[in-house]
Image (cartoon, rainbow, N blue to C red; front, side, top):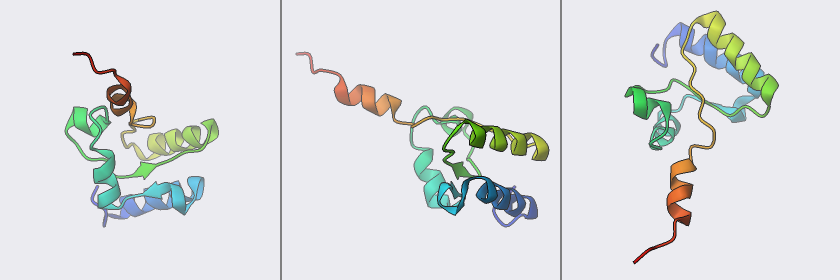
Length: 95
């Protein structure tokens, strides 16, 4: 579903209703930034996310899951996306 698609806009608007405009993005630059982590779902599936959302709590996640079920779109969950970078950053240097 391309960004100009009617279904895309409908889902985006509902996500904004759930989370607020500061916590939902379909901006291509933001989406691309979140696909750089090697553990991101898009890295594994070689696809691109339609939206990046940042739920605050369990209830938000439940609402997003219900929305995905209602509109039949795939949902991938990634926590901070910084796991591998953090592990690499704290690994001690061994000579």
